[in-house]
Image 1 (cartoon, one colour):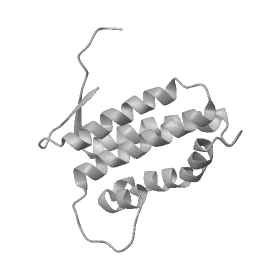
Image 2 (tube, rainbow, N blue to C red):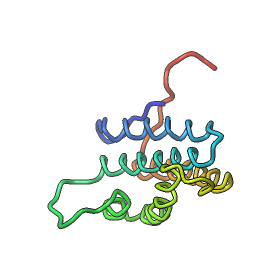
Image 3 (cartoon, rainbow, N blue to C red):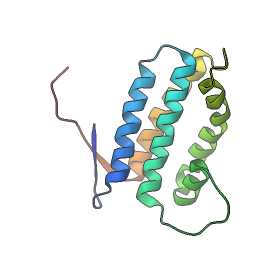
Image 4 (cartoon, rainbow, N blue to C red):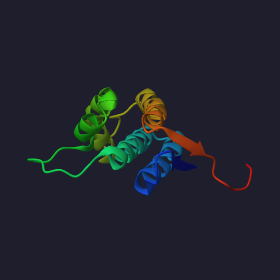
Length: 138
């Protein structure tokens, strides 16, 4: 898939959205719940990175803050999404470390669906037009 921004060329944000969509597709086709959860959360981080690339402006801050905190700052309308995915980060870390049975199939499926919704909401927030990729028909 390819993204185009109505207001100028923001290739970093478009690249993040393309990568998010690819990672989300990987999550959708993965059968292991832990891996599906990790991939879905990674896709969400890439969506957040796209919003940050499009809206964030360099500024001096004290201390470190994560993508979800920054998201709430630059896109307050997405702050609930940031809180949701921040809360999922610990479970993602446990799943990524290989902890057995930390994520159920239902939890992984729910996170995949949430990322699908987040991607759509972020596209709208960034006023994107989605251009289908050129390639052979499947």
